[in-house]
Image (cartoon, rainbow, N blue to C red; front, side, top):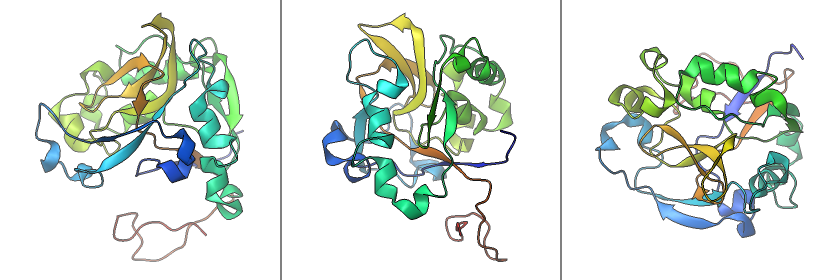
Length: 238
């Protein structure tokens, strides 16, 4: 529809309890390599902490998002992220169509990535209706400062992106997009690399997960002069 909705991306990574204790595949510590990322203020939430990691899918050669173990852990299992949110939150989240066919082109500019994701013959070739998804590569790309937009996502491992991208956390984490045309012992999905670039890899690797959803257009936030969306004065949903 043409309704205006707010897209929400979880700031912290999903845990065993968020997605069900039997759905977390491994634990690993965020240990920055090659650069000293500690100086970048947007890393304060995950610096030197251990996070839970999940498979995109454990079903070999099945790259249908709706069949994936991660989709089920987010949406349909009895102890899924959706069910753990409770009815109060569930009633505020819109059921939307996610473009899940993916694409086989990552080494291009962010505007091209966005257009591929939404092209009916490419990224939007297959759609799945669900309340909970993951971010697209374009979400991550446009979260950076504009001077990075002309760069390929392969080139997002630069200081400007690492300092200014509000979605970057120096953690390997999954996106919702797969690569339907690339084989590496299996079909692959795209992820944000801990170095800042976007790449594709085996969907049965275990990476961090930040759930994503859209608030219904009827949802409002609490007003107040002190509320500015900062950590100290966050927006609060009514």
